[in-house]
Image (cartoon, rainbow over all chains, first blue to last red; front, top):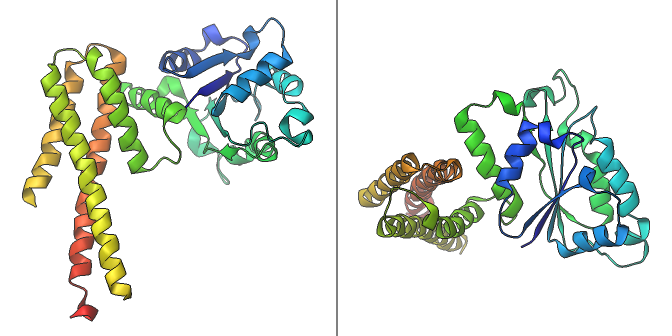
Length: 230
Length: 62
């Protein structure tokens, strides 16, 4: 699966959050595409990038309940009516669409009755409307609130949650999480320090065994349920 | 049955130990997050076993 991250931030080098995410995005089959870095927007090239991806992510800080102007400018040029739906081809129809947004206000503020009194989903409505028009599968928005206040543990969790958001199969179920960790553990264990391969393999095999135990229990329950209905 | 739960606890401890040995930030983060999934597996296993027991003791089937 190929993931394209369309990032918008006018001063990306000064953004601690974006720099942190950029490190996390250094994964196989993930492309980091910063729109403010483009000298000019070559519509054909941008559309080809979108066509080549299986999952398209818009990533930006929230400025006045919207993305920075750079993303809007990119959208208005690249997402032509014909490309999205006008020519009768659903160019993006088989793709997934997600948003990674970071906010300076706490997450709890973005709800009815909260001090922002508006939800993140409401704010993201224009992007989701485009995704709907393009017949894309919408992923739940990934929100990072007040990154600088997160403790070390929460930052680490955010990094891995972000990597899963970029590359894990949708939807985010335990089964899909297990599959992601299984695959990533296999790929990453050669970089682990202070441990032998045998030890890592035992951990991996036990993890797989535990996943199979869960699957087994689930199928036992569905057999019992069938029996109850008969 | 107890044996399986012990395996879950053992795995959680092993992954934790492994995470503490990591010098690279990303590896540590990965294993810390993986330990959470192991704990989720353990919880789900326990819940599913409970459901199996509950359904097998369904009084309507007596």
